[in-house]
Length: 99
Image (tube, rainbow, N blue to C red; front, side):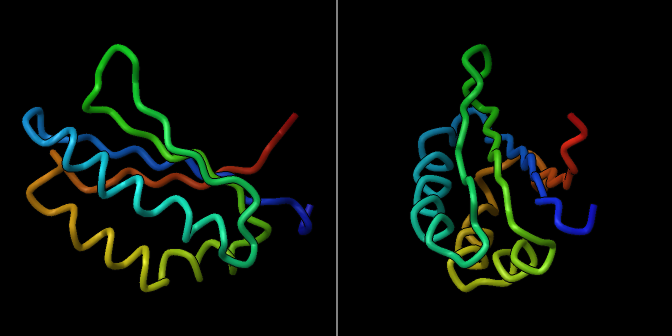
């Protein structure tokens, strides 16, 4: 089980009048994150029924790779831009695949 990848669901909720601004910030994170060592999957989803609701679906080779991503300059710069765009702090959850 130690070789299992880490799956992440990171939900971010925009203020109703800041959807497009938040979307632009989140889209900027995709390509640099996909290029990081240990990145397997890095996708951004937008809820069809609630356009303020965004979720990153990620897969990383290890906790270390994910932690390196979270500490990366690109991620930190993006996180700094969230103030005034989101209703609350992002909900970042780590998972293991069961089946």
